[in-house]
Amino acid sequence: MKIGMMGAWNTDSGASIHAELIGRGWVELGHKLTVFTFLKESFHGTVITGEDEDYLIRCFSTSRATPQTLDPVPLLTSDYQFFVAQDIGMIPKDLLGKIFPHIKKKAKTINVIHDGKLSPDPSFYQFDWDGIVCFDERYADFLKKAYPEDKIFMIPYPCCPWKPGNKEESRKKLNLPKDEKIIFLFGMASKLGADAFPTLKSLTKEYPLKVLVVTTFPYSLEKWRKIAEENPFVELREKVLDMGELYSYLYASDLFLYNKPSLPTVAVSSTAYQVLGSGCPMVALYSNFVEEFGKAIMTYKDEKGMIANIKSVFEEDERYKELLRKQKKYVDENSGIRIAKKFIELFEKLS
Image (cartoon, rainbow, N blue to C red; front, side, top):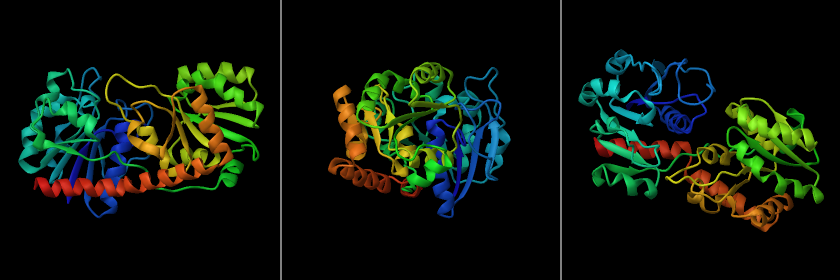
């Protein structure tokens, strides 16, 4: 099949993670992919995380740019039978709308919804999509209020493939202590982990502990710098991690902590889909970001629950072993290649 996909690519946004996992899955399956993505001076996300592939075309700005720009020529002249748009709230919708009838003449059109509620922007609804893809029933419930039910299809968010690593080798590579328990936090959400620091500190009474934070986000840095100055077991590293580096840190760690509370809208943790394949246990505050993962993630609702979960991982007890089995099962069932195949099945159905 020949597939065109429009949206974020090679950035740290959730939409980019989704697009890359299914897009690279299509390429692996032998399909021809053309990706239309944001200009380097105006992209969705905070950093560009990879080198441009030869099937990547940068031809538009974000919807937040002033002025918005979109070069229509690549979209009009590229060869594709299916057109997949990712997170159109970030795309210059009215400019796309002017050429959308031409796209529909040659391709079936699919919109992958990343919004957690119906958009208040009228421009969002100007497109006559052949299919609307959402991640689970929570999304489908609000989409049914605006779109015909027979156009809505649920395809789960994809996981990075199961690929555990070597803890000892990774710690040596990253210059981390061999015999300490390491709790890892990274990126923008690490600032929320700072709220749990008093609980983490209490664990130093029982374990040789290192809290390792890797981030470049100013608010996260501000919070953790102050904590690190007063607590020698906290290490702060200022770095943007590509996927290879991120997995090295996950391999080196005993657990990844995610302390993100619920949103008032539907939400999903793209971070979880990004990290679970590492085999590093994820201990998370129970919220609508992680409610769909079942027992593939250890969740807590209070300080007592957090401590119990962390101790379970540190002691590698039966609950921890069951977590790893559930984690691997979840990742295998929702791997990028399997989700890519589900999109191919949808394309065939729409044909």
